[in-house]
Image 1 (cartoon, one colour):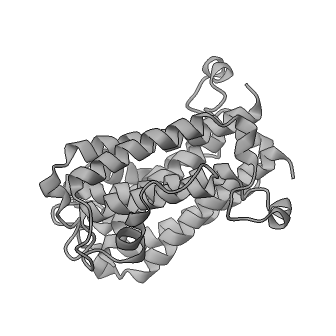
Image 2 (cartoon, rainbow over the protein chains, first blue to last red):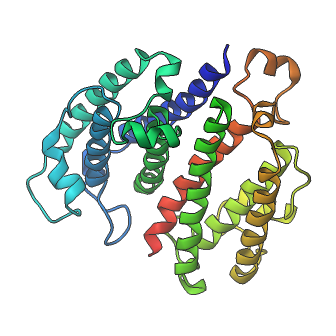
Length: 159
Length: 159
């Protein structure tokens, strides 16, 4: 195994384990529980779920893997704090979006060769990337893994 | 910059940013606030702080960087759930331990060359490592970064 594919495996092992942990937790929480705040006055479970789908939708663009699947989630779950809009999908729908998005993202990620992960993502230009080669697609997976664990830690409090 | 050092930089950028985020948050929380539970019936801030120090102490051993600095934290913060023992250090002491440990860990990590991070950690034997080269020292940094973000997300609820 080349060093490059070892790196990619290390990063994806963590990303996939983190997604699996989140999935297990999500399946353990009822729709009723997800309506609750993770702590008094803080975000509700439903908001964290919608927020994660909105953030992962943006990964598709950053990784040059196509358009967002659920652009309508940007406004309620990224641009607005929780409990400021009532125009949000049901938890049942968000669960379907989450599972579908995970499957599509996985399929697209699996199709990339190891060295393609060291090419630039779409939010950095070629000139900056020449000087800062760490701003590559794999780094998007690294940063979104920590984002996901941050909110998994919070959602876990509903259990 | 070689691919190896780019990768090490990607991992350490995330680890250092995560430590900085935690530090900023910790400095924002008073000793009184850290005595509170992050959500009703859940771990207190003081427990999460002690738990992180205990886990990072173990990194020193896994990375072959020497012995634990605070072995007395294993029992109350790793082996026991919160609120089951009263024999724990004060928050003032834990803050000192945290800062001191961060400085020592940083100094030791900075002294390693990029390729040394791809050597095996101490919890895997040479035979297994030959087949599973991803079980290297750098992977310890990756997994502890997600562990730290998980608990940072929880501690953030005290703000």
